[in-house]
Image 1: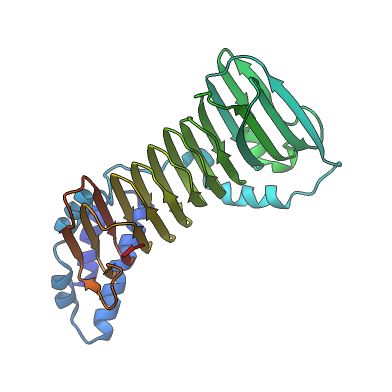
Image 2 (image 1 turned 90 degrees about the vertical axis):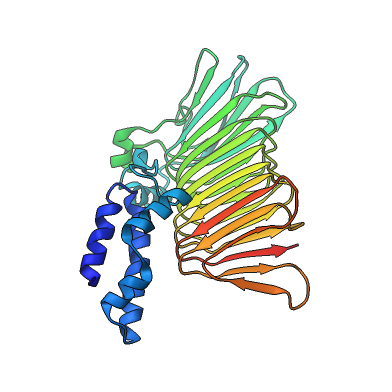
Length: 347
């Protein structure tokens, strides 16, 4: 089978996969053909070595690397979010910035925060009310309203996305919530940084670009980002992270972690987690563990898998996959990458 015929079959079987994911997969196969031809191999020989495109598709689907009809949930930002973020970050101040504050005494069970470009900081305090402090040109630049038990902060206005110069300029916002309150926190951020350090809250964060720092000790955290670096230092019961590009750095005692990314480095320092899943396209994955316990399964199409057990000269390198049982501990580790390297180290 010639290269064009092989790639046409790949296009057919992966036609319903996420285009960003498939683009990285296809690049890897094109590189295999290019390297093989440079080494003097025939296209038919390279195609035979790579395997049946249908079987490759089914294997990726089973591994969870691709899903039919799957799409990263970045549509709310549109294709222009990168350009918009740059415009917001470079926008000149028209007036002197001032600090404004507002207290919300009402009982709130959920907070929804929308940022068109300002930095967000969320903390606990000893007060019974919610305090909001923001830096902007004038009072009222940051919309704040309550609807029953829902508190809404900020907004994403379509006309502001197309014409950033018309949007009120807000530099940053700090939200202080009562310590021990288990209200849900939902954040939509087009651009700007998010720094969250609270107790006992479920957190959902969808971001276009920026730096994300999560230091909370709560129940669950869901982070869905496009071009953002994600750092997790808190201890959640569950963490789900999905990114298109950007580095992911996790140092946590979280019980369950699920990480899905296309590109960027992934580093996880796992202490007491019961279940860990990491899926990537081109990311290098580095896992550090206090003890090599439980079951581990790792696979990489063209990357290298390396296990360092912390003993001198005891670094073992594997081929495309590894499946081992280190102990009877109830711990499951599953890592897969198309072209990235996978390493496991004992702390």
